[in-house]
Image (cartoon, rainbow, N blue to C red; front, side, top):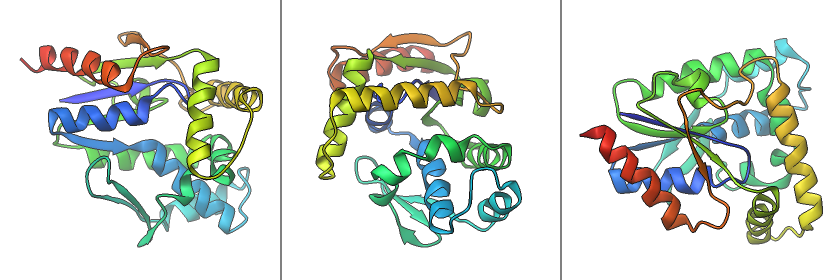
Length: 220
């Protein structure tokens, strides 16, 4: 069984998907982390998002792996634990630019499908139900108000010691939505057969229960 969860940044996808995976005892595949790893690698090597040749070489030479189970999953890049660094402000501010090029998206989509082959999993991102796993058994499209998404992102940054205003974060989220929705390859969009879940005002437990209930009906 494959559960695909899509939605804009800050809608609660990652935390919810991890918890759903724990409840259902299935694999959690963090595709967003994979794009963040490539972004980090490109920034370290000072490769521009427009340099397709260098990006293709970078993706081919970058090993991405995961260890542990939620909430203790670790993300590895060529044997280095980059779990915290890929969530930092530098990567967050550039990931939309580096996940847009076709050479990056096509390579990582192939890898995601390989990772998901033959096992039940929960997968979240922005093109999971439309591109990565269009045949997913359950598709959820998570949304939330911009104000709530900005507040959630503010808490995430605060845990990393970064202070940003709600207005600043709301503007950044709107810009990321625009970039993700307008990219040429696998643009961010809702699958026709996805079920809407507006998480504004919902607790994490409520979001998880909502999805788990529907997943169990599909699994019967």
